[in-house]
Length: 107
Image (cartoon, rainbow, N blue to C red; front, side, top):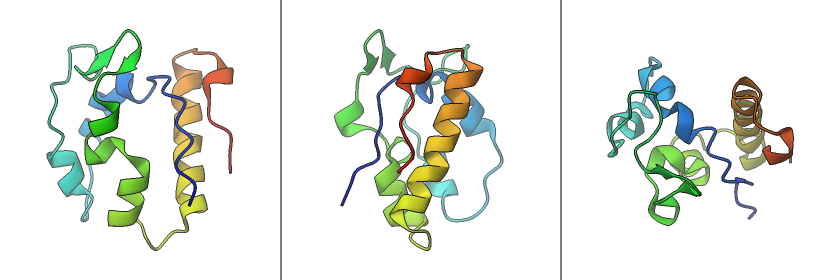
């Protein structure tokens, strides 16, 4: 089983405030409501450090693509779910004008 190809670029971490403000219905609301870290005024996660996520190995469910798939999106194949998240990741990287070389590749 292949893990989500996160490059740890921090694009999602810089936009966690936007994600948490997006209306969510359904069981995945639990993961949104359980987000344990502070969101800074610029919308970034308080656990984002200069070298990326400082709690990556123990990151919240919302930040763990594979755990989110297993818990809430098992009706999709792992590849389908990865590709949906890769597309979102690539969009965030474009919006933030980060190098596209940081973007994960579709599986």
